[in-house]
Length: 362
Image 1 (cartoon, rainbow, N blue to C red):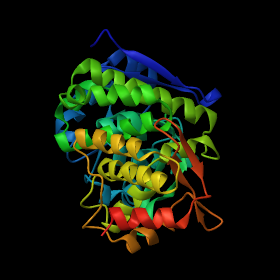
Image 2: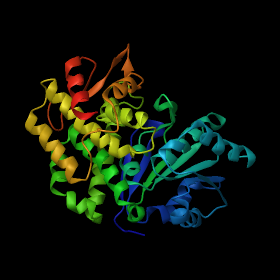
Image 3: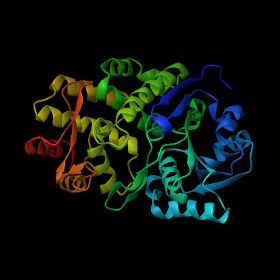
C-alpha cells in the first residue's frame, strides 16, 4: 500500500464523495471495508480486466462477491448488458442497501452506474477505474448510461458513486494505445480552464507516456480537481458542466459513424479537440498559432487530429444533430477564445463548421 495517497472530494452536499488517488488504493482492505460494510457486493468487470485484477480486488473487499464479467469494448455498451447486470442482482436477491463495484474502464463504469441507478430506483456503487481515461474523466461526476445506434450515451441517468478509487498501479497493465487515449481527456482539462496545466503537459509528454509515477499522479489529480469543481457547480449539466464536452461533439460523431469499433473514445476526443480548435480559428476566436500549438501537443502524445479518410463530413454532421447538446435544433459547441478559455455557445457561424468538416473529414 502506498503512503502517498491523495484525496479530493466532489462536493455535492449529501451526495459528496471522495476521489482517492495512489498506487495500491484498490487493494487497501481497510479503506474498502469502510465503504462496503456488511453489504452484498457485485463486482462488474470485463473479459480483459477480470484476469488481471479481479481476484486481487475481491480478496481486498473481504466479503463474498458475485462477479459479473461483460464483454470488452464500446460496442458492448448497451441496454442488453445493463440488463445482464440487473438479472444477476435479481437472481442473487440484492437489496437497496447492497453495493455494485465497477472494475474497468469507462464502459464498465458507465454501465455499472446505470444499472445501479435503475435497480430498485437506485443503489450504491463504487468506481475502481482501470484506465487513465476513466480515472480522470468518466468515473467522476455521476454520468452513467449506454449507447444507442443513433448516438453515443443517449440513454442514461445522473447517479453519483459513493467513492472513486484511482489506483495508479493498475495503469501498468494498460496498453500504450489506451494510455494515449486517456491523455486526450487530460489535455482537455488544460484547454478548458488551466493554461498552466496545458503548458505542464506540453513539457511532460515523455514522462507521462513513460508512466512516471509522479507525473501520472499530478496529471490525474489536477484533472480530477478541475472536473470535481465543475461538477460541484453544475451537477446536471445545465451550465458550466457542458465545458467538459470540449471536443466531444466532433469525437462522438466519429464514434457514432464508425460504429464504436475502430476508434477508442479518447482517440476520437483527441481529434475532436483539434477540430474544436480549428473551428475556433475559423470563427475568428482563436489564433492560428494557438491552434497549431494544440495540434503539436496532441501529436506529441500520439493522437490523431483528423478523421479522414474513415469518416465523411456529411455523415459526421448528421450524427452531430443527434448530440445531447442540441437545444432548440441548434448544436451547442464548446469553442475556445484561447488556451484555457473555453466557452459554450449556440451562436456559431455555419461557415466555420463547414470549414472544419471540409478540412478534417473526408
